[in-house]
Image: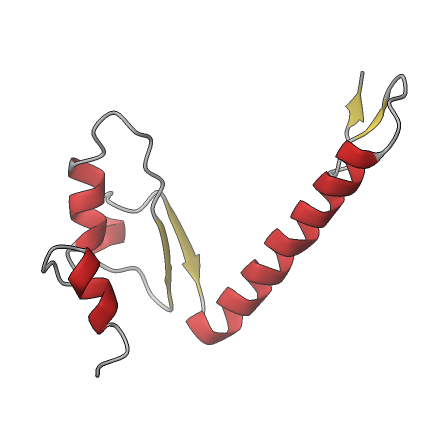
Length: 97
């Protein structure tokens, strides 16, 4: 079995290459954000399909991205569990009231 065969099954036979374009066109009122991770810009970048381009090696970027999301989520949970106080700083060090 190919590694991405299951993705093809749930996507209704679409190739993964087509998925960003279909998502952009068929958002059905839902906001769709497309982040492209690639060493170089691609037609998705040039055609304005991607909202963001993160340039670099996917194998290096994805683990860093996952780690950062986990870090932000844990800080967010800790903030939710902390007793309420007046003022303070958010996860980016910005003053909140």
